Length: 247
Image (cartoon, rainbow, N blue to C red; front, top):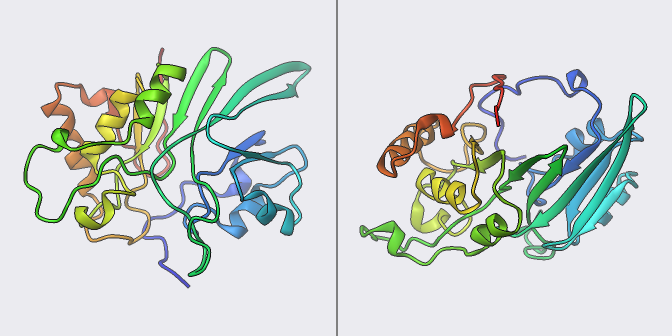
């Protein structure tokens, strides 16, 4: 049940290198898929989840689970080729909601994530809104109240070398704005968290809302231009594309 993917996955899970840690933003089906989790789960893999989600993993036989509240930090240490590798993983706030049925909305937490390792830092925005836009609003978006958490994240952990920030599933705005960023919102998040380079995610994968599939990148470019930011600072990738982020 539910919508099917409209674009292919970039690779098979079996093609991925060994995975030390997986961060979960929340429990909606398009972000927490049973078959995907089972394929990712290996004896050495740890899952980091927001409050209330650990039991779901235990029920399917996965025990390497760390349950986090906002602002919790966890030190992960693994050994790779005889070298001890360390990372800090922190659960951070965002603006969304949860639920996998009609009766469990808001029963579990949602989050964004920060990962710091080897003098490199990454921010994963999860699934989030930025501000509420009322029906019929035509004024200046920057005049509206917005979620303060992203500036708090930027002050505490930024600047980030790279961020993954959602840019799609935003229309109609009066319905989706509290829980899903528009491209214009995403640029604000990029600035708030002090990201050096950001990648747009959460678009053209499922038919969740009514904007055209490939509109988000176009609006992202326009918003960057309006704020005087270069396109190279925040862009999108085609399916399977990779980039080399220089510090």
